[in-house]
Structure formats: C-alpha cells, structure tokens
Amino acid sequence: MRIVGGSWRGRRLRAPPGRALRPTADRVRESIFNLLAHRDFGAPPLSGASVVDLFAGTGALGLEALSRGAAQLIAVESERAALAALEANIRALEAGEQVTTMAADATRLPLARTPCAYAFVDPPYGSGLAAPALESLARGGWLAAGAIVVLELGAKDRCEPPPGFSQIEARRYGAARIVILKWTPE
Image 1 (cartoon, rainbow, N blue to C red):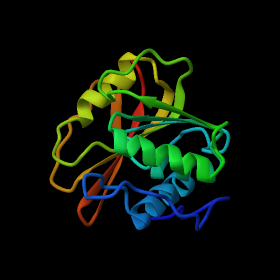
Image 2 (cartoon, rainbow, N blue to C red):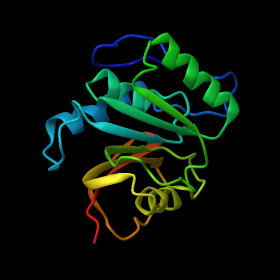
Image 3 (cartoon, rainbow, N blue to C red):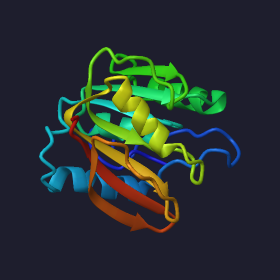
C-alpha cells in the first residue's frame, strides 16, 4: 500500500498485521481523487482544505488528501492497532503538524472546532455504521456547507443518507462501492 499521487507519491504506508483492517486499495484511491480533481461537484478545491477521515485505519485516504494539497487532516480511529499504524505513517511522512488524530467512535463525535470541506467515511463493510457516522458528522458541525463526503461501502452494502446529504455520484470498484455526497444543511 502506498500514496498514489501528490507530493508523497510512491511513499509506502504501514498496516497492522492480520486481516482485521481493509485499507482502501491504491487504484480505488486513485479513482476517488481523480473524480474529486476532474469533476465539478461545486466544492472548494482540495488544495488548502481541511479534511476529516472517519474509520481512518492506516490513514490512506486522509494522507492521500494531504499529499494532494489539503492543509489539515483530522483522522478518527477507535481500534488500537490501526491507530498505532496511522501514527507510524504520520511520523514516516513527517506530517505531524498537519494531522490531528482522535481515538474516538466515529458514530459519536464530539463537537467540531472547525467545519471541514471534505470528509472520507470508510466503515467496515457490512457494519451498518455509515449512516450513524454521517449523522455524527452533521450533528457535531464537522461539515462546512457544500462539503463533499466520500463514502466507501461494500459493493452490496446500502446506506440511506440522512437528511442534508444528497448523492451526486456512485461507482463500483470490485468489492467496493464509492458514493459521493454533498452536505447541504437545511
């Protein structure tokens, strides 16, 4: 697993041993960031943006965003082994000043200090945690108006977005389904 684009392109990322963690595949991340760069979703540019990454795992999605110009990342992860791998990846990339890690349940986020322009939500496949995580982002003020949310689900998983989220794109990549949502609070 590696960063696929931007200033850290080609840099390897660590993952904890075993199969408990399922990092987003390199080709899927590349497709996500190509969509964000080349489709007009009416969002601010990724360059200079604040980003939140829920169920961050190794940090692959959030660190990819930083590599491609995002200014700040808040990475939320509750599993100890994944959090250790995430922190090791942050140190290896010397990204400590740009990243805040939170050992927290993504479905019970505290209030945000500053809303983010982008959110990556990658719960375990089949967990049913996508909608509660989206609700937590909304309830806690984590999303700026017009924010883009990239949701990764299992190909067969379903998620009915809570009020305020509208689907603007959906694509399938093997076992993964990527759904891009826009946050337009009522």
